Every structure is written in structure tokens, then in C-alpha cells.
Length: 296
Image (cartoon, rainbow, N blue to C red; front, side):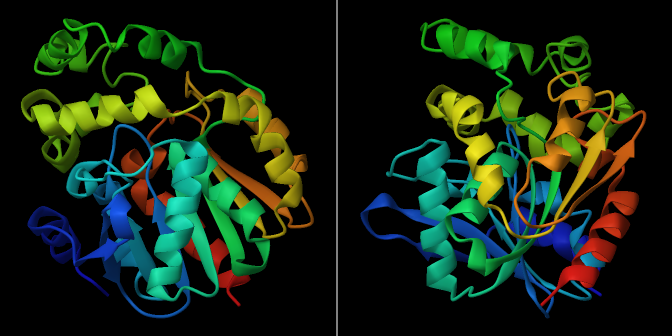
């Protein structure tokens, strides 16, 4: 078992290596454990360290491959295109560089959309998918649309970053109250890895805003449904039922939309958006059981 403090320190120190992808740049990459390959894809406004609480459990049985998405955190020098489909092809190129022939994916938020698009593009290579709270086919996100419309005004980004330094804002609906049932999570290492950089590191903040600015949400509305039909791997949804962004009543309809792979569901009744952070031990246990059952 990789000890939790070893995993945390690895993310503090920087990537195990950079996966070079030609003129577009390189992706920060970490690897832990041994066994069948499992790729972890984070969402917004996070980076690869969001999987730190799951890795100690899962790395006992699997080789865990973690990336910072293009343009984010240690991958911020990215020079290539940014978008849902663009990330899909970028990550496939990274997998080829690493020699990943067969793998599962554990993904969350926008990373979950990208994971499904990858699984639809190369279904013969994907043997399982675990999805935390993520986009729902045909359901647009009004809040993100509004943010995209205002984010380029010169005064907006400095103001938004200033708000990320205000504790009352951080614990409000404009901060992380939609992400956690228990806001004391902000006082854990989550604050160190994600909250502090948003408020105090301008380059990091801008990289997260650039991701929002460039992600084409029409892909979610128009392309995710057809992608589901092409997925042949088993799928597991792990959801927070109180998530105000990706609502459970809409999400549970996805179960019957995947292709030939069976799908099943586990939920946290009090959970919101970041259940993989807040309920990590149970999330890891469900994920481990699913992956061990389907590894091949």
C-alpha cells in the first residue's frame, strides 16, 4: 500500500514525469501501484491531486495513472487547443505515449465527459468506467454559460479571484457550498491543494478560467448521448444526490443509455458535487469492488 502521506507529498513536489506531446506541450503525470491500468481524470476547478484520497486503496491492486488536464496546474504551459473533443484526443495521445493498451477510467465532473468520449472513440481499449458527479447528456449548465459570457471583461477575473480569498464567499453558493455537505472540508488539505491557489496564484486562477472559457458545452448537450450508445465497457455511477449542478433525478436516467456494458449506481444521499473528496473511503471501496470485478 502506498501511504497517504507519500501520495500527498508526491502531488506537492510535482509530477513524476511530463508526457511530451510535440508542439502542443506536455502533461503532468503521476503513477502509483501495480496491476491493471486505471486512468484518473479530474474535473473543474481541480487538478490531479483530487484523487489523493483514493490512490492509497486502489494502488494496492491497480496501476493508477493521474494527469493534470491540459493547461491546468503543472500542465499550465500547454500550447495546444483546449476543449472537450480536444482534450479527448490529447489524452488518447498521452495514453499511446505511455503504452496503455487496456485500461479503466475513474473520472469526475468535466473529466467524466471526456472519459465517456474516449470510451466511445476507442471502446476496445476501455474495460471499465467509474463516474462521479458529471455532465448529463442533453442537460445544459446555465451557470457555466453565464460565466463564459462575462469572464473576458477585464475587471471580472481580478474580482473573482479576490472573492476566492474571502471565507464567507468560499462557504456560500458562489464558492463551495454546492460542492460539499460539510464545509469543514475547506479546512483540510483540500484547501491547500485547491482553494489557496484559486485565491492567491494568478496564473493558476487564469488557467482554470481559461478552461471554462474554452470548453464547448454544446458537446454535452449534443454529443454525449450518442457517445453513451457506443460505450461497451461496464459503467458505475457514484453520485451525490444533493448536487445542485448535476441533479440526481436527471443523472439516474443515464443508467439505461449506455451501450452493451452494464451500468449500476451507488449514491450518497447527503452528498453534493465532490463526493470523491468528502466521502473518499466509501467512494474508494465501491470503486475498488467494481474494478476488481471487471478487470481483464
